[in-house]
Image (cartoon, rainbow, N blue to C red; front, top):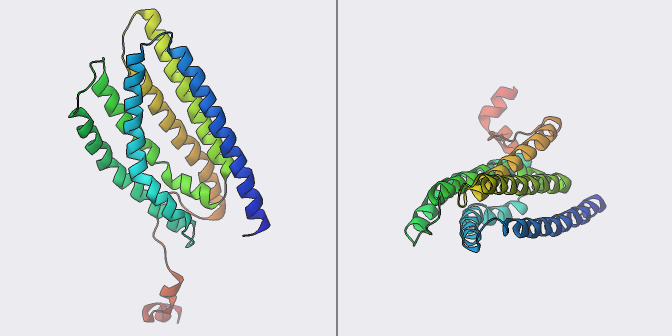
Length: 229
């Protein structure tokens, strides 16, 4: 590994550690604010929905991320393979939602609507996977840290604003504010990743969409030789 790659990895690790610490601190502060407006029961149900989202994301992308880190065939190959996470995530989100609804569903307002939003948010977040793996391949750790930090801040703002507004209006939306916050998180994450990586893709001649790859070995085929002649 070159000195540049080692330096980039060290810098990236620092950014990611700071991101984890700051996001945990921000989440703790938000939870303390929400405790003034919501019951512990609602926070518990929100945790269940978050576990549902984490399960969809974990089974759809984690093993694929590990495999793609060992892929050295080029950034376009990695991007193409990352679309498998989206194709896996769509049926997984539906299957896990069905399993959740077959259990004892908590009696809180908008629980089913919130579950659907969490499922959709998981799919939107998975749609950012091609840009995420491209950032990993290019060692663009600042992009990852910036995207996740922006998404976390927006989620906290949306959730708190929704809860405070509903409390002042005397309305009970149950766990819907958490679902709206999760959707905002996924949308911002996808937007930032694609905005930043699209500029890199234009400069370095790769695509964030599925793209057919022409192998260099195909030039050795008889058809290719005829075309060259």
